[in-house]
Image (cartoon, rainbow, N blue to C red; front, top):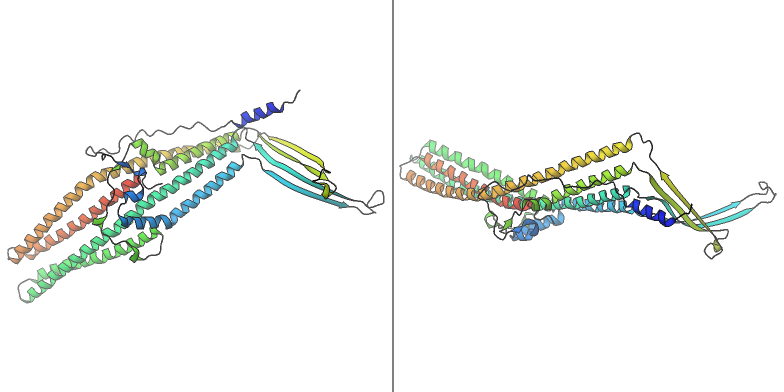
Length: 468
């Protein structure tokens, strides 16, 4: 038989290109056809996709630039996500290194000496042997794609961690913006409560003086006192809320608390860039970082199946050395040394593993099924979140306008009730009721205004804005 090394090399090359990874088909998500069932909703003309808009463009108010920019620089969750990427990159490089042989150089020196008593000739002997070798240690030929499958899995895990960081960044921008908006809203509510408390305290003082003159009644004074203490309770409540909002905001920003560095602004002054386009469902769903993360994890689990399948087939590892040996160290590299080489191929054929290989394959397939479910859930979650925010955007505008008209009407009722009371037509109870209604409507107006602002932030988030 004639030995043909080229034939063997070509055969090994063909086999090494084999892979046991199943063909990948992206799970269907045909359920996500339309964002919203509200017929009145229409896309803005010339709108820009959220992912194409930098967060500084969308959050056009300079106040946001400080709080969000600080959070992106110092937030601990985002820093941990960056370390996760570095960790996954290192693991990928480790797995990729398995595709290449490990080449090592080593040298040995053997010195022996025997005594006269132990020598057969009766004379002691000494000898020296010096060796220098360059060798490949247990390089596994990837005939059935096990190493490549592991490498593919590690690569997709690395890409998934990149998307995980994008998810953290996306959420951090929205959470920081919403925390700042909540602070502004509670500050506005606190200011409203202070004004209401002052007005009701003045009313109480006037009624107390009138009681001494016999003009007002004890019942009117008691009712006024109730209104004063109700406003005082709200004052302490909103004071606490403002302090807690500041704590939450500085935690997201990742810096020591210093209220003096916070931008001075009001909820009414906050603006966002108009013309945010929701785009086509398929485009948005596939570009969201959480969906891409789930898809990369699914690809990794798919590659794990290839590695588990390859474990059923033989593995071949090669060990070889080539070097020089000499009885004199000075001759080792000067041409006076003898060449020496060794080639030790080894083949391992799995025969009985106690069911371990089959169990590993079953485990890989189960994990892929779980990854499919996670991917489908990510799609469904994305569809639900975008649909909810689009529905809220349309209804909150109308709700805020109606609430403002309600406040205007309540202000008129309060003015008329106060005038009728001073004219002796109505009792103080009608004034107190009108005052309470006006205060409640004003509080609701601020809350709805906050909901409208946070809805715009959340819509930017669920459309993938600020992820990259």
